Length: 290
Image 1 (cartoon, rainbow, N blue to C red):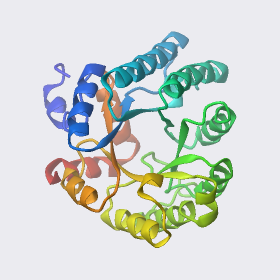
Image 2: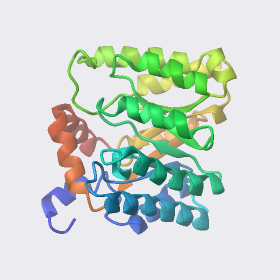
Image 3: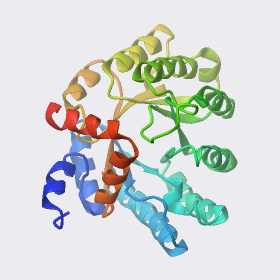
């Protein structure tokens, strides 16, 4: 980060640092506050098999350190970081190596969702590995028009599902362009994941949002339907809406904070901002909000 001092001052609010040790230190601090964590090693769309293998090895080592230090944290990874663009067999082997290490310590591994170019392949690979690795967890995006159908598939699998809004630029025929429509779809999908038949299949829900209205909806719906607090959690990004942490805890809800780290921090943020200008407004708004 030292090469880009101005950018570093902006990004350090949202990224733990360049190294795994930076992330582990932040996770320990958040755990001490009673917060669960997820950790992601920044990177995507690797161009060599060696890079993909290196990324998988980093997650395996991270899982070992999480277990050794007895931290309440789980990894959250992108399949293109593990080589999905290069060869699906390579990607699957890398993913299964991470999942196997996670399974050994009874730790979930979240498989992030990327742009729509990868949606089908991500869900298909998740479905293939889940029978052997029930610790695999999947992500869906509420701004996509297709997600209601994808949620039905995941309910059939009894999946562990993170519901987020989505941050990639997509055409209007694939994604709702208006925020109000994204929010409405998020609420519908949340209700579906909390439905009796989904819960009967042991669907676990990660409610990934900083929107207080949706957090309240999740809390109230769970209480009304008798869903135990252990069956879902609220998820937030590191450095965003820290002012809500105490309130969420006071409501008796589980809160998990996603902590990113890695040398690719600059490229990661520049790609997200270039893909979707609304992302810049989001980060600027929360830079000063707390």
